[in-house]
Image (cartoon, rainbow, N blue to C red; front, side, top):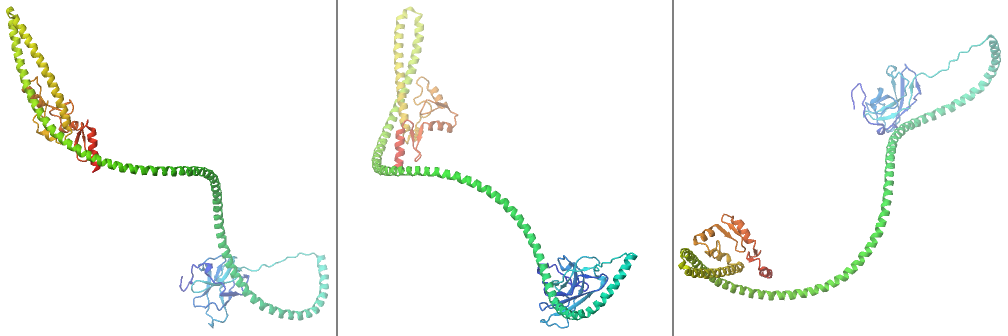
Length: 486
């Protein structure tokens, strides 16, 4: 709000916040003559308290805020500040500061806070219209007019006589007019109040028009939504029909499921009976497990006996190995004798005298050959027995310690009976043989590969890491069963 001396205090307050009925403008003309001063008459009601910087401005009709005034005059303070009295005031606007166009204007009373407290009816600045008539007549018409004037003079005399009576009636009418004017002044105040109310109603109508436009836009969107909802409703109806068909199918399925449920209940009763039987069987199985445990203890005792037997058999195998070595040495000695006999036979062949002796040597050679074949057969049998014993030893837990302590663990178990001791030792140092099959490996093979091949023939217990021969699978399963009992 501006509080300078040359400019009145104004504000941006809109019409809705103004009170137009606290100051009433009276005797407002419809037209004011251009070039003349204009006096504005107004009445201060008891609802307003005049202050030093209140002012009266001339506004063009259609103004929005008090900053849109055309000209103004400071409102004089009344001589009496009695709040209950109705105060008549006036201000005079100089012609120099008045508008020069013929637009509609109105007086507005504005307090020092920039709020409008009263507004007059609209008016304009131009002269009232006058009808000027130019009449053109002829001589004959003039004579007729003179005759008419004479007649009119007579009538005028009669009218003067009647005028006296009319003057008396006029006095009465003037008295009534005075009363009517007083009543009109009262009505003018009411009209000003109604005009201010009309301005309020006009602003309200404008606001309602804006709201109506917004409502129409909302109505259009609601219609569009309604159409979409109609389409959705149609889709929902089709979906409802589909769901009704599905519901009927589900009811049929529900009936079948109920029937199946009844059968399942009957089967459940049968299963309860079977479960009772299974419990009884479980009890019998537990008793059998106890018997199997006892049998396992007996089996373990028997395994201890077998281990002692294996140890004795190991000793027998060692003795047989020694015997094989002796037989090998005997075979080598026989081979040497055979060679010598062959040499002598060749020498004697040159001599016909030695024919008989040659035949005897040949006979002796055949005998030695038969012995050699018999020894080979025995050697094969011993090899077979040795492999059987080794397979049985693999099922024993202490086989690895025995294999480590055996001096003949590498190469052939009994050696090559046809090879010299030096050749046998070289073969034993250059080859590794699987104890479970006939596979042989070079000496430079990695221990992990050789160990994987040997372990492929064994079954290892996941509980105690004990190994069993693959052919003794039943013993391995009994061993696992013992762990399950524990």
